[in-house]
Image (tube, rainbow, N blue to C red):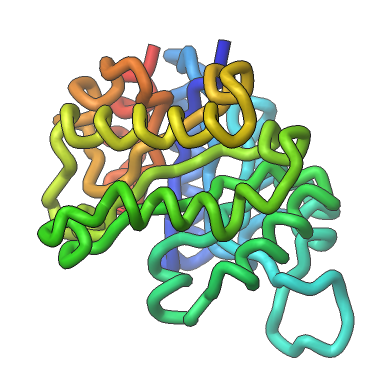
Length: 251
Ligand code: 13P
């Protein structure tokens, strides 16, 4: 049985008091109405330690990124070891905003995955095609390459410690969600790629999340698809009631 996860990516939003308030509203809601999935919250770096103390076992905390290096003279960077040391347990790697805006290449992403594995962080490895690639019908090819250039350089043991998030770039923050059928088609393709590379057992057990304008209205339709094991939620995760509703849609 693969893990079912709803993860929140808060991106660069909220000052500390609002971040604490949101986390408290989420944990309050989860205590009242426990989710049957794992709940993971990825706040900005500066709130990681504080928010770990707020989760009280009801949710886990993720970083949104980590440095590709271990430690040393890398001003402004945050290492996987530091993230581990404050009690976070997951780390988003390769989000399309990092690939596009911060020029993260497959080599850098491979190093970041390695740092996560070295420091007991479960990477949430993001892949997904952009609008042009989808219109040119190259989406399967693009996603296959994103797997091949990064995740497929690892052993099956490492791959087994990974969560994959399929986030079509054209659906992120645009209100244009992939239809449940489009998402299922790609999730099933990703699972087949994993099976070919690492074997059927891992393919059956790896968690594949959907992200991209997933919200309280459309989550149920996406989550009923057999290869969709949960979501990576951006905008809708900034409102506690919406996020809790999404968590409760995943059974
Ligand atoms: P939105 O849910 O705001 O489209 O963002 C999705 C995302 O990028 C999560 O990582």
